[in-house]
Amino acid sequence: MQMIEHFRELLHYDAWADSRTFAALETTPSNKALHILAHLLITKQEYLERFAGKDSTGCDFWPEMDLDDCRRSQHQQTTITCD
Image 1 (cartoon, helix red, strand yellow):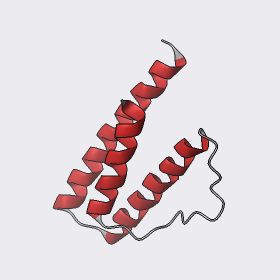
Image 2 (cartoon, helix red, strand yellow):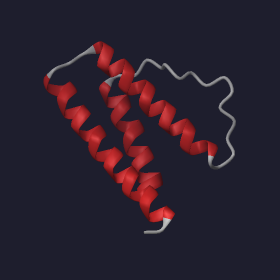
Image 3 (cartoon, one colour):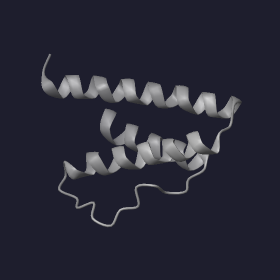
Image 4 (cartoon, one colour):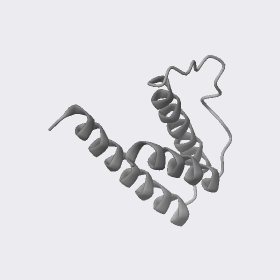
């Protein structure tokens, strides 16, 4: 398996894991879990953007996001990286 194929496979798995987290948060809401999810999504986004040379200086890695914001962020990441 080539490295890029392996990377895409990992991103698909990550999208699957995120979807499971969203489902869990819909049935059992948790502000703490939502805050951590938002952090993970923003951190992943910034990490992926660094591949394109973006400087993350000054990024808020602990944003206030609701579940819909998190879904939009995850969808955008999946659309960009898995296609």
